[in-house]
Image (cartoon, rainbow, N blue to C red; front, side):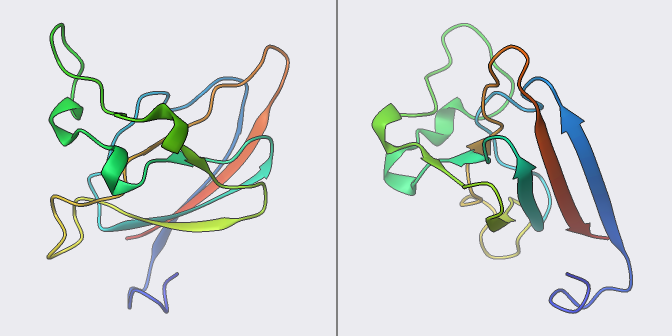
Length: 118
């Protein structure tokens, strides 16, 4: 990650989760994040055609749903590595990948690693 994005430092997070960390679809406010799930369901994301970006941001009554086609929701498989482009990516500020943490059934866990260039 440091080599790819020409930085000397990275932020590393390894978390064992028993509930969704970010259950609402959103776009990260950073250039890029690497994510992988070792145990449990992987991160979910939407293709551009299935997004209403007016729904992004803090939820409030009357705000539209973000996913315009729930059948279009994609999911990374355990072990897949995703590079998630965020709104901090220069030249793509309005087109970061819209994603969320998957719901977990009671008693199930998810082991997630993320790496951010720092």
